[in-house]
Every structure is written in structure tokens, then in C-alpha cells.
Image 1 (cartoon, helix red, strand yellow):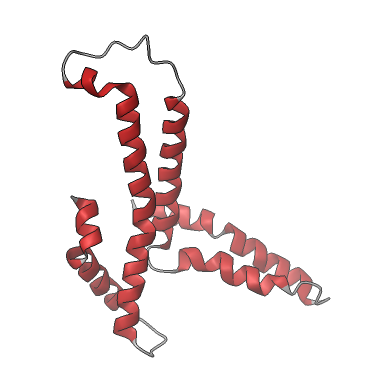
Image 2: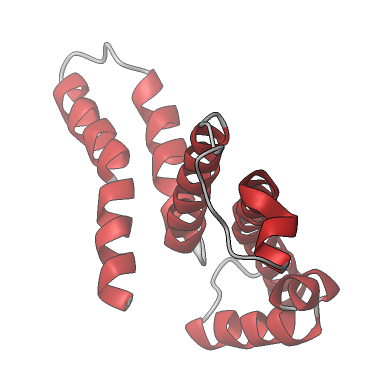
Length: 154
């Protein structure tokens, strides 16, 4: 799994690499003042703790949401569902539920990252450097004690 996230991190860092290449090209003539701003914005999303998880989680959830919306427009009159609960819920009800879960999965990664960064800010205070151990401990605290995370896991 770590290799998947590392690969996604590399893909997500491509805009930052493009900005660095642009910056190198413009260094000699000084024509591109926007490169510095671009470099800070592009690179920061995956460099923060859980950055790759946020990007990949949101992309997967957005894809699920789009697919559910597209499927919702189909004609389900030919579908034969088994008697009982499946027939009561129906295909449209099932898709509505899936869209709700896709939305929940879409907003959870940034929420988790926000709470982790808030906890790290409390721990670090005025220090600029944060150790990997502090990140791990803060993640454990957020994961075990935050009510939003408990609701999501439930």
C-alpha cells in the first residue's frame, strides 16, 4: 500500500516539478515571477502529513460520485431485484446511498488532515521542525479521540 501512495505522491508532485523546471528556465532572464508562488502552492499539497492520502482519497471519492450520478440517469425498469429488502430499496435508493457515502469519503481526508495539522500545531508551538515521532503520536491522538473520526469509522 505504501508503494501505491508513494507512486501517487510522485504523480501529484508533477506540477511542482514543472514549476521548478520553469523557474530554472526563467532564472537567467528573470521573466517569470509567478514561478515562486506556483512552486509553493503546487508542492505543499503532498508535502504535508497525509498529503497523498488526501489527494488520492478525494480523487477516488469524486470518481465514485460521478459514476453514481451517471448511473442514476439510466433506465432501471428491466432490473429484476430479489424479493425483500433489495426490492424495497431499489436501484435508485441504492445509488442515493452510495452517493452519500461517496460524499462522506470525499470530505473525510481533508478533515483528518486538518485535525492532524491542528494537533501538530498545538504540540510544536513556535518550533519550525516537527519530528516523525510527533506526527505519529498526533495521528494516534486524532484517530483515537476525535469525534469526527469516530463517526466516520462507525
